[in-house]
Length: 151
Image (cartoon, rainbow, N blue to C red):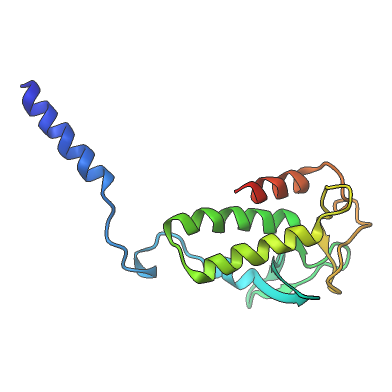
C-alpha cells in the first residue's frame, strides 16, 4: 500500500511540475491589450522613456492627460514595471525587455535630488513638482518606485 501511495505521489509531483506547451498569445491567460494601449515611449534628450498613460476615456479609449496632474505617473509606471519584470521570467522577449528598460529610465528621470520621486509628468515631459500628490517626498509613489527598481 505504501509503495502504491509513493508511486501515485511521484506521478502527481512529476505531472504538477511539468508545463503545458506554450502556443503563444492564444494560450496566454493574461490579456495585455489595454496595458499595451496605455504604454508609450518617447525621447527626452538622449534617453528613451517608457510611460503608462493614467487616463483614457471610453468608448474609444482615447488617451487623456489631466490638466492638474499630468499624463503619466511614477506610481502606475512602477506597477507596470513590476508586472513586466515578472512577466519576462516566464515569457522572455525583446519587446518586454525594451519595456523594462524604458520604464526603468522613466523612474530614474523622475527621481529628485533628495532621492525621492516626483509622481506626475506634465505634457511638456517635465516632472510636476507642485501638485500635492507629486512632490518628491516619502510617500506611496516613492516606495512603489523603489519596489519596482528592486525587481
